[in-house]
Length: 369
Image 1 (tube, rainbow, N blue to C red):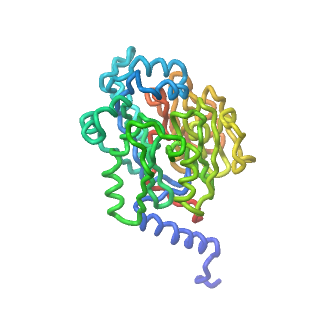
Image 2 (cartoon, rainbow, N blue to C red):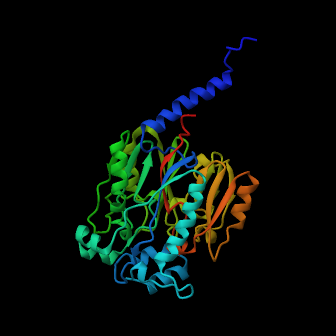
Image 3 (tube, rainbow, N blue to C red):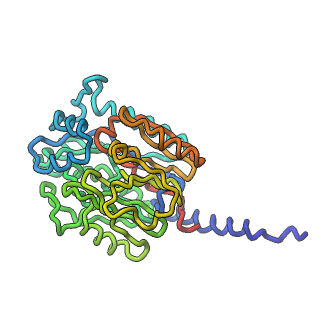
């Protein structure tokens, strides 16, 4: 046998690697899927302030929380998280959030993921740079998913409809600036609403939790709750900005659901965790016929679906005092996926979970395979 003959399969693998690795090397950021091997990620901070009771949008926004969590939000209105002391655990909201973050970071780093943290924002910083009036809306650094997205080598900053989150983007500037300086990155920002003005119906609003990659398609959630989430004009805006590289599909959701990633997670191609009750028009056609792990809306409201695929074999998910998530964990393990569970009760009580708490900056390419 001629030892110089190259196996076609091996050649195909070498060709794929020769394409994939330059993509990562040439770009300081890159994401094209939900489950390509995660290399770099931002994890949120435990700092924030709850909105005041008298802000006009609060009652509508609280519809996305279970009743007990909405009641706690009202009881702690206007408080800095460092001054919010849990009645049983006797720890501050900040301490509890960071305890959960540390466990999440430990798992990510054990799986070879590089973790970045945003710059801490203070009430003084926000008052100085946005005006002290905006502090009535509060601020929230625990969920970095929503302020931006990485699509390919593009970082796109969003105009959020959720008033609580308007100032959070300032915490990302140092990370993005360093990435931009490295090269191979496009950096785009949406038109931003005035800090104290709710987004008008004809102004684009997008939130990162509404974006889910499915191959050449990006699904974009559109809750019927008018105070949170992405809107129809935002859907039109992102289609024009990204162009033909992806097909965007708008996915209407019931008003008690905040974002699409609360009711859809894709651990690998052909497998999805879903809450069918949340979809006004039924499941998107691109995942029909897939292997589906179905979750009731009561569990989805407690963030049972909002997990993070680290790659096709590792998945990080939360549990809390209300939902242990045994069903989803067992179903994933039956399918050969290793599940890393994190107690995330404090984050979950604020309306977000593992996916919300992370912003992927770099994943191994999937679409180039």
